[in-house]
Image 1: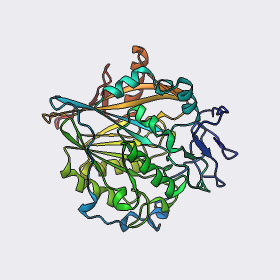
Image 2: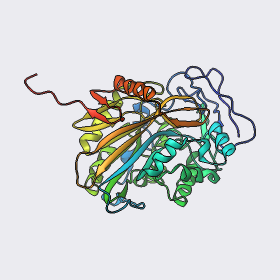
Image 3: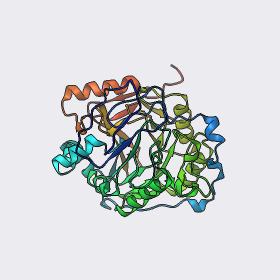
Image 4: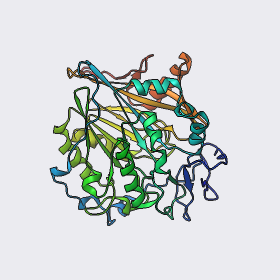
Amino acid sequence: MESTAKDGAAGGEAAQADGEGGSAGEISGGSGNAAGEISADGEISSGNEGNTSDEEILSGDGDNSAANTSNSGISGSNSDPAEENSSSVDLLFSGDIYLSDHVLNAYDKAGGISGVLDEGFRTAISEADYFAGNQEFPFSSRGQAAPDKQYTFRLPESRVPIMNEIGTNLVTLANNHTLDFGTDAMLDTISALDSAEILHVGAGANSEEARKPQIVDVGGIRVGFIGASRVIPVASWTAGASSPGLLTAYDPALLVQTIEETRPLCDYLVVLIHWGVERAEMPVDHQTSLGRRCIDAGADLVVGSHPHVLQGIEYYSGKPIVYSLGNFIFGSSIPRTALLKLTLSEDGSEPHLSLLPGTSSAGYTRMLTDAAEKESFYQYMESISFDISIDENGVIHPAAPQSEDN
């Protein structure tokens, strides 16, 4: 495995040297000096790679406006439903997943996923009715590394079973690494996930496929998923009417249309979106405005990724926007991470959210179990969030609306 980075990458957490021995992941340095790209093992360059300007994206040949936006692009797939007589279902969401050198070394040394995730997280995922996350890499052996990217990620298709072993049901591919090795590698990824029976959103052979949601029956509740990215390095990564790529949201019109078209097809709608600034613990303006537009269009929950750190939670019009869940499995030291737990009831009662806090080091992610550690985590999340409280069980409570008399 190759692991190289441009000279001058600085900031963030100290990089951890990959051990030799040829684990199957790849990280290659490009000839350019893209800003802000974080390495798999914790190193980050100055700036914020991937945040191509709005003008560049909107003038690119791959503009999403070229898509066929008819309802024929909206379809769904079913996973194995939970027990029909269950009164509620639990869905778990993670942040960024990259099977880096450290992760693969830990996995191979342990002979399985126990080297990567502790029993607490493994049990939580296995007991949940559904698990979705952001897959921050392609599965392929084809393609050439993007020439102007600081870090490019790739794993061979033979490593796909690790995603099954984690317990993954669905991933979003709408991010700034899916096309690191070009469109052939992206299409290989889609084929590999299909073969592994892992659903995916946010990428496809054309814009119609990239924006197609997945509608999943989870214990009798129809849950819709849409994936989109507000972070890509060049405009050509955007899917066009006849060109492969991602659903992007620099111009949110097509994402908004997709949400509006999907809303009648499901009971609960989740938008998974890649956005923001790396290592920033507070959302920037485009996250706030885009997240709220998603809610206005009909999303019930917005879950963000890309910053590689936790960001806060906001309730807007009574619906939650979780700005970033940070890294979940990535290889770098992760002082704070969490799974987001969404509980839905078949009787249509109010959904509720909770956090399962954790930490990660050298490719191993563990759940926090100490009461004091968890309390500190919840206090931190409250401090970076917007008018919420988190109780001792990790349950998130939006602030009560103020009366007009106050």
